[in-house]
Length: 278
Ligand SMILES: Nc1ncnc2c1ncn2[C@@H]1O[C@H](COP(=O)(O)OP(=O)(O)OP(=O)(O)O)[C@@H](O)[C@H]1O
Ligand SMILES: [Mg+2]
Image 1 (cartoon, rainbow, N blue to C red):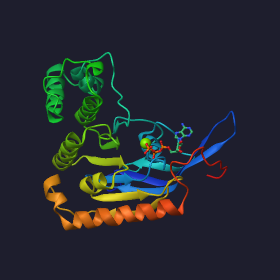
Image 2: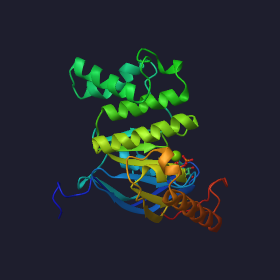
Image 3: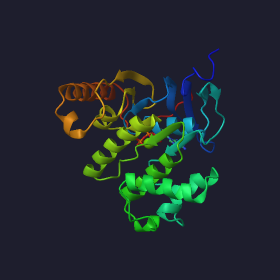
Image 4: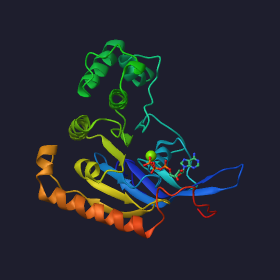
């Protein structure tokens, strides 16, 4: 039995998920036997096509939904629900509409009991980091989609979780801002050594950010391969786009994704396949 100190930050063991519609009795297999580990300071991306179960996997790790089989451990302890040890940034903006930017970012710090001056300063630091200085007193309804997502990033970072779960956080942001935020999140992970699990369907984004990419198959999501990304840090888009290793890696992964997609059901084909197997 490993000690708590030596155990991985995150252990995902044989996770499967079948969604069952109780009214119709129909079921959808979203994930099948997914296992992997994250060590402290890892930056790992989960890459897979739309509908392959990425958000489902992240919500299971966050403790928001229960798996049909398998377990999730943080530092060797099985989780049974959400906890302050994990922060989550959702695909959709999840801000409190009645709170200002500043109060949204401070929210988790209030719960933690941080003194007022300290939490205000910390919130300002992260608001500045995501490029929203001057917007502290605005409400979410006054912000663009991309700006709302930056607030969500600032709020999660300010809470200093042991594991940060990010579900396509920059998908709604314009291309330039996205690259800037990707560079920032890379720098933040280096500086804070925060362990990050980042979901994306973009090969480029995964290769730019990750130390390791876990590639999922189309639904039901199974691990297709785990790819190490051996590019030096800090990474900038300018340097990476001229780097042959990066272009070769992304081309190879794109081909692999196309091959698997053509060999399995189409991720865009609806209605869902009905199955009663986990
Ligand atoms: N609450 C639910 N009830 C029933 N089926 C669900 C539920 N949530 C997700 N699903 C189904 O499970 C599968 C995986 O969904 P999920 O949202 O995890 O995919 P995803 O990989 O995050 O997709 P995207 O890249 O489009 O966000 C999909 O077929 C989806 O329709
Ligand atoms: Mg999703």
